[in-house]
Length: 173
Image (cartoon, rainbow, N blue to C red; front, side, top):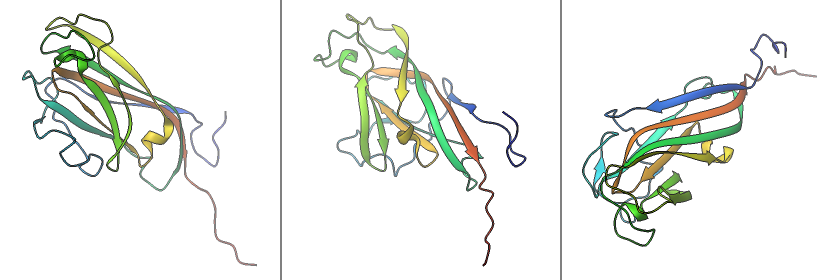
């Protein structure tokens, strides 16, 4: 597709990532106050203490923030996780019942279990890919949190969409 009004053709893919030991960057407006969320929150990815949650917000760079018109076509959140203790089931009080949550403006949008095959061994790792709904990325950001006996070693948000600068000028009759 040729450029439109001097702009690069769409769609484009952006990848935002956070690796082990990287600091988290939660947007406080997205997460409800405790309770229901805990007060023990890790400031970094790759934490090693059970009963610790992780909160993080991926914020999109320009052009999303420059008054452009953007449409997200697809997105995935990939979490590299590690069990800090074993897990027996979704009903057990160990890594087995740990979940991920997507929040926006204090409202829970989606959630799911981090582990779906049991038993989970302490130290076990896996990569979990979670499809995102485009509306969850409104406002040029995505906020997530995870529970508490599972460490998030790294996270990656991959977004495909199109942003164009409106090319309209005011006219008078």
